[in-house]
Image (cartoon, rainbow, N blue to C red; front, side, top):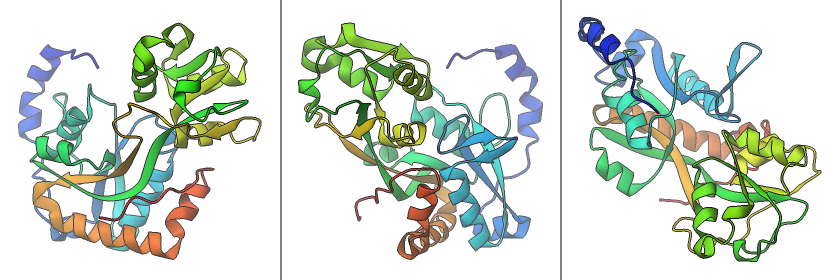
Length: 275
């Protein structure tokens, strides 16, 4: 993401300094009656606008947390920065240089020890599902090493793109077709512009509901993490919010409501590993 409007940022400095104080603890949030939640903009099936309303699994989960805490939820849609560290900086602990403040809670954060170590202003917690790469096409290879000659649609600069581009010394580079988004890659498959698509399983399940294509998880030799967990983040000072939100997530998981939430968006729920 390009860093533009430097002059605008300078002009906004007095406004940034005048932002209201952030919540110090969960009691402050409850007293205000509002939980501010950061979600990614245009990120179906997790957070996206449909008919003028914000929808998605992350949105519904955040609303469920707010309901259990007895507060309303205000969403702060964010555009991804260059990396997750930048997203945490902009959404959770510092705020974007163009203003807008920070959120109390951020959804859809990789639950990763190294990421947590690098961001000591942030507390990562409560993984609520597991994600993995998947293949969609007329057939699914048992291993990525057995991919044939078909053209493969991927989201540009995604994990799927980087992995396939490096596989076996770049053997597949000539077969890879790049698209600006996962939905664009899926559309290429549907329109016969590609023979297969490789991406996150959740996005493939959401975008290919008809059953016309097979979706599977070929083994991915050389991939450091074939499966990763997705959780939430808050400020280091708001651990009491994290503990309360974790209790809500655990309750939703045990009751089966979390799995049903995912199923409403045509997603198979893959529970995170226990910690």
